[in-house]
Amino acid sequence: MVVLGLGGALSMWMYDLGRSLTGFNPGATKEQLSNYRDEIEQLRTERDQFSTTVNSAESQLNIERSAQKQLVMQVKGLEAENIKLKEDLAFFESLLPADTGAQGVSIRRFKAENVAANQVRYRLLIMQGGKGDREFSGDLQLAVTVLQGGKSAIMAFPDAKNGDADKFKLGFKHYQRVEGILTLPDGVTARAVQAKILEKGQIRVHQSANL
Image 1 (cartoon, helix red, strand yellow):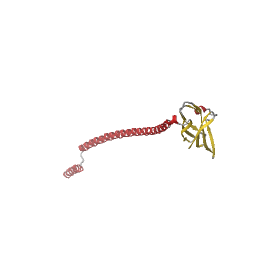
Image 2 (cartoon, one colour):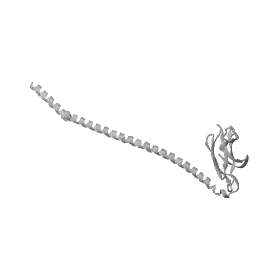
Image 3 (tube, helix red, strand yellow):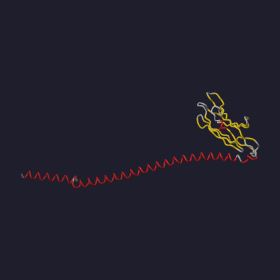
Image 4 (cartoon, one colour):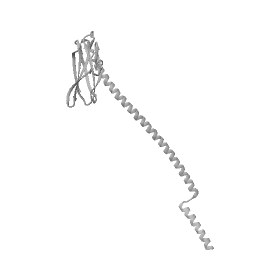
């Protein structure tokens, strides 16, 4: 009995010693678990805050990118408008000596350019020299040199079949600005455009522009 009692006491002592050496403490473990939970909850809160901050930053970045794209488009639009204003200024500057110029009709600053695979934009300023006491009445004709199927050809505008002759009518005392877009058939490549000013069916002046 004594030996069994001593053995049991020794076993209990060894058990308590092992718990103390390994740091096992039920109360401490619960406290540590509670601390871990608090830390995890704090980390979750910080994570949510960081996520909100990141989302806000991404939204702000998207807004700034959109604003930047709009600014780029506005700049391009202003550049195009600036080019047009410069051309207009050159047009009107060329009007200054009109009263002292020679009598007759002339073409100023004739321009033609390809704007699509089968479209040509033309712009020209038609002026009448002298004092401008006579109103000019006539027509504009455009002859487009094209390449089709490896062969050169000439297409005339306006085309009587299209019924667009009214767009090429001219009537002015000092000057008239004319611009528009010519649509060519598919597979046709424009090479040059010649502008002709007609009065009573007679050619008064003509000018060409290469593309």
